Length: 113
Image (cartoon, rainbow, N blue to C red; front, side, top):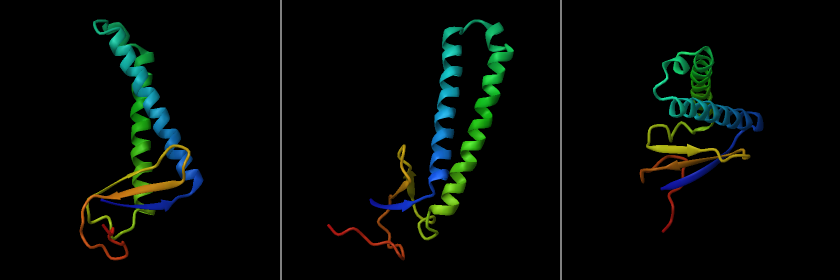
């Protein structure tokens, strides 16, 4: 596995971090409501629960779009044809891209063992 680091714009890093936090929070609230009231259809069908569900779906869609934008802007084109994953650590502008294959990729150095 090879790793490359790409510097991204601070506002994009903060935006995706905020979305990730808000999405996680919304999912946690929904899960807690379901776990606390598993047999109470009045709670699950309540306006408050539906509002959290709607907000969670909106955040999920917004997060997926933000992820697509990060990939479009910052993942080198030569890597996109290969198996990779990426991570953006909290409070960082350094996008860590892990290349999962050992293929020769133009512009990407192979690790020396």
